[in-house]
Length: 172
Image (cartoon, rainbow, N blue to C red; front, side, top):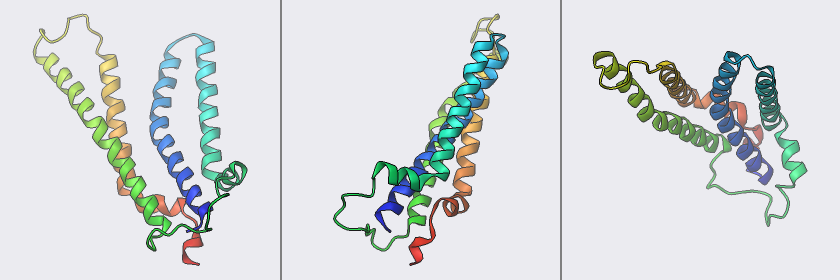
């Protein structure tokens, strides 16, 4: 694996992580901004979404240009990294699996806590005040469920995702 291919893989892995963390958060903030009648809030939310999408586009599609522009492949003693003959596809697969597991295991406790509070409050009035608004709790439950779902999709589709983000220079 060449030095340039290594940094391309690292940048694409970072882009996958940003996508998995950002897409659900942005959808949450857009939903919140549409609930508010303030046009400047909606403008900034849409602008930040477009900026996030542009950054992701460059990280996914223009990775080689980013590596060349930043000079990440310059100054190494050799032109290749030796990972004991490991292909870059497997490195990307491992990174994708770790990100998927991170999404799943970091959100399960919060989802269980929110689910417990919702179920407990439906049977007992002592848990929450009667005028408590359940909408934020339900939104958190949905967002945590979406994080877990995205994590599971990433884990189950790790091989096709890894094929999208690896170059064919490993076979040479």
